[in-house]
Length: 151
Image (cartoon, rainbow, N blue to C red; front, side):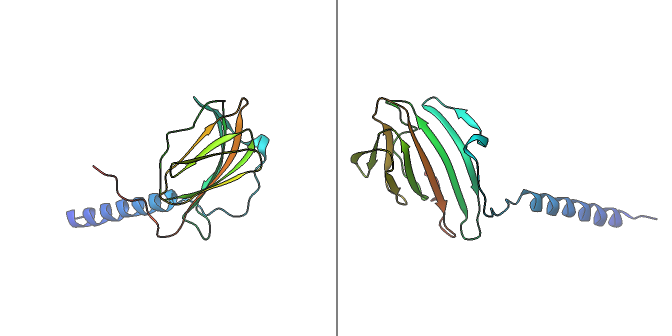
């Protein structure tokens, strides 16, 4: 005959098992070497142009590696100048953009590279007459966390 204690122990074991399975299944997989074809990327229309998400995942040496591709319409910016703990490389594919780094603006075109260091103010705007497309490579290193949100 089952006692209340037996039912309690069994229920606790079942709940603990479900919690463990959920925790294991919610872990993000570490990205291995990969190649992503331009034509296979999903294109998302935005208010400033369009974007393509290439990947966003932990790697064997990084907490997260993200790559996306943005196309800005003339005169547009993807967002206001800001800063964050992550570092970024921006590789200009086509068009002319104005990169503002810590209040200093500079125009750059195809083939140019922009590095945005951790916690430094940065912004980007298409200053050309045609769409500007650029690749963003962004990473989070182990142990470097975003500061808590100010209240």
